[in-house]
Amino acid sequence: MLKERFLRIGEVLDRRQPDLTVLMERVNKPHNFSAILRNCDAVGILEVHAVVPEGGLTSDPTTSAGTDRWIQLRRHEDGVSAVRALQEGGFQVIAADLGPGSVDYREIDYTRPTALLMGAELYGVSEDALRAADRSVHIPMVGMARSLNVSVATAILLYEAFRQREGAGMYAACRLDPEQRSRLVFEWGYPDIARYLKEQGHPRPELDDEGQIVGDVRLPT
Image (cartoon, rainbow, N blue to C red; front, side, top):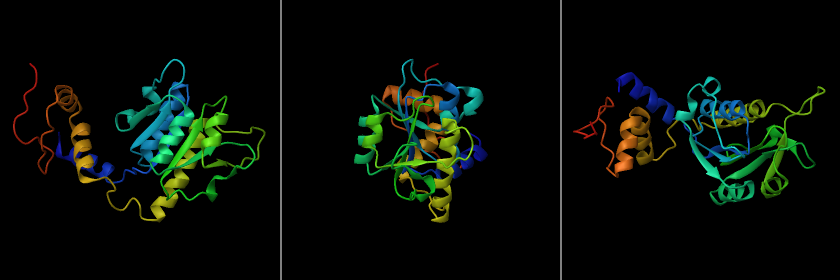
């Protein structure tokens, strides 16, 4: 790994926000799924959650720009259990919805641990998941259309979170624990080696100050 790449990986990880995430409930169009991943990477999200739609999840490389390599994806069986799991982890779950009780998205405090719940473009968030969420928000609109594309809406909500968190200094220092950061530097810098060692149950090697592996790592020939 080149030193420049090692430093770049470190810079990106030092701005990751472990307590900001997106939960996609059956977002089924590859370009929307991929665009949301790209949005998440742009604001420093470490992990996203998804309720898998029928047909599975696929990404569009031309839309994601490769960001699916830098975002961890956690899959869930249904929206309610996903919402509950996030709440048990300390997250407030904020659903994007146009129904009664929904507030302007700018009224939410996104410096708290937050998960944004986004539904499929045609159907929105399911009623059960919406009831399980803590709050619901909408983006004010004055045109004939009542809603935005789901990836665009996600971007708007995420950048409000980014604005608030940047103002609160939450991007100023690394928020990952040292072990997690070291593991991710290795996995991002040496993905093939990391995958092989994990499959074989071998420990992760140390890296020096320039990102080079310390010691010998035996790989299959």
